[in-house]
Length: 557
Image (spheres, rainbow, N blue to C red):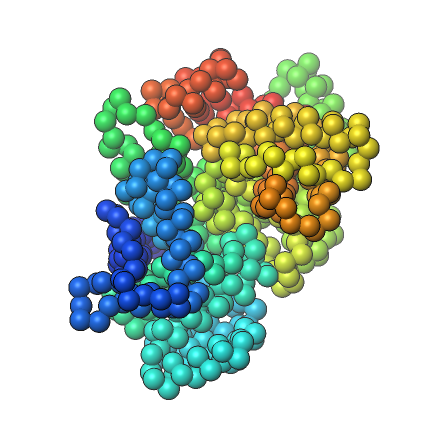
């Protein structure tokens, strides 16, 4: 794997995407200084913007709605910080989104994992620069509307191939929502409006992705590994990380800066050492297998112990003998882009096969039963989810049917949840159950307040999760829309996600493997500092020590 090429591309691509997105926003009258109104000749169906040329820039219908949403998002964020910061954060968010999707689709097309098996960014022919999807759009099984079919033919006829490419790329991303919903969220909003990519531009992100990084680095049948996704993500964050560390010494690290300040892609040998001597040891000490240990370069044999210690170890190994592969729970509470979980998948696959599982059945079971992970960074979470699912796809072609539950999540906050909607929930429950659920749900919402500050350090009590889920899912409105019920469905979705995350934080695990974030108390902002002083008084000097304490609290044995 050419890490120099990967690093150079990722750093360059971030700046290029940001520049292109700002350019597109500028065409819409949105800059880092202000949001300009459409020109006076605009109508409800067409809006015009002054871009300093003879002809103004025009948008219509769906684009008008997308621009309106973009303006709303910036204005909401500006109330929490200031306008320029809000603008920059939105641009960064959009750049992240498209970077993640570009590298994900590149990985999938190289390994022939796309459902249509038609390349989106490139061609199977080395002599052809035009992506196969642009050449053969009707063979991609993308369920085009009548309008889209006509638009494809029109753009082809007019030789507007880059515009066609953008349209088809977005269409493919939205279609992949059915296969990988946590990465390919629907993008019919401002994110889609700001996409500005080209396959013909030799100074564009797509061209450089195709030409700067060898295709074999993505190909798992050759020297490629899914870990390339993690390396790309870490290098993408090089400049944001440098910016945080270059801040004045007395300046505290903001909540949104914590991922950049603390994330580090763990080197492969460290990952292997940790996983082999935790997950690997758990299994072979209860199920001795010399062949398995031969695969583990960094596995350390147990040194000779005193007789009393040896007796205790033998008792522990008796318990380990009862463990079955499908019952092992492995957790990474600060998973980043998933490097540790991906290697844990490899070790689990070896364990499953050693007891007679087929690779196909093992892959599904590993995703559904064995791997758990959390992170405060939404984009890192998406790539960890993608990496684990791609690892499973190596063994099971049907794993991307959208039906396999993956227990990886980004930590969410309860700050924006409308608590007035809680009184509309719990239909059909007894009054006692309803009151108990309401009490526990309010406690949970309090615990997730500003959760992006604290991540997996949050303490969650073992609630009656089934009752809470029933309470949230059952609505008393019977589909009738009232003033107080507006937004209730969105609240329910947010609550169900918090329940998923809360369950992971509350349950115990057989193995916890992580590379925790490192941040001394001098860098902690006020909220984070107060939190660790309250809940981790003996470990408050550094985040890593707090996480070690948390890991032991969540260790099952």
